[in-house]
Every structure is written in structure tokens, then in C-alpha cells.
Image (tube, rainbow, N blue to C red):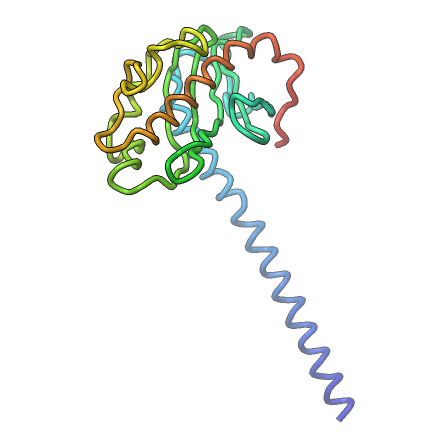
Length: 206
């Protein structure tokens, strides 16, 4: 009986070792493909928030980590666009913490003078049929940020119309667009401080 149990134990151990090896092999073979797809998806998003003709560096490899209150709690990634050696703009991950149904994650592209180049929502939990109009598949609302200039954090025009600004809200929903507008404004104002910080920002780990 003991020998039989030992035999079964060895068999199970061998099976587990083989299974572990196969899993590692599959992971190794698929990781590069997954990484490539993720990079392509990220590049496609970047192309939506910053015109490719404005810069000539590899934006995905020009990544820095920041902990900045205007972008929200925690660490955010920013990507610096350069033309030659000159920084010309940034793509920033930012959070609107005050959405109707929780935090809204955004990607905001701006130059360093306060002009928004593009904005996209990357994650949200807003109400279907109301707040989800921040998605491009449902509405062109978020496309209207491109080309708008933010004249400081107290710019009264860069707000939803219900707050006295120039940006439309949704019929029956103000909280969601207000949260997005304010997050974009904070990011755009913060971007104007970036050129002076670049030499001191830590790079993202590859």
C-alpha cells in the first residue's frame, strides 16, 4: 500500500511539473503577442488625442510617472510628445473622481499653452442612456474638446452651460459631463507646468 501511494505521489508530482512547464511555455509564446496588441491599442488611443503630425518621437517610450493632485489620486502616466528635441505636448492619464457612478478614467492630450488636442474616456461606470454619452460610440460630445483653450483654472468659459460655461451638458444629466469637463480643465492647466518639471520626473519602467 505504501509503495502504491508513493507511486501515485510521484505520478502526480510529474504531472504537475509537466503542466506547470506547459503553462509557462504557453505564457512565454503568447506574451509577446499580447504585448504587441496592447501597444497597438495604446497607439490608436494616442492618435485620437494628439495629432501625429505634431511630434516625431516614439510617444509610447516617452513615458513618465507623476503623482499630481490635478490628475487625481495615486500615480499617473504621462507621455511627452517632442518635435526634434523640443517638448510640444503631453498625453496624460487622469481621473475624474466625481462621476455620477464613480470615477471616470480619461486620456487627455494638450499642448503646453492650454489648448486641448483631444480627450477620450478609457473607463467609466456611468448610467446607460445618460452618462455613457461620454463614449464616442454613442455621442460626439467628447470630440468637441479638441481645439478649446483653457485660460487658467478659473476660466469661466471652460465649464458646462449650467455652470455658466460654454460646454453643453446632456439632457437630463449634468453630473457626468461636469466631472469630465473639470478633469480636462485640471489636466490642461497642469500640463502647462510640465516643461519645467521634465528633467526631474521618473521614467516609467519598461
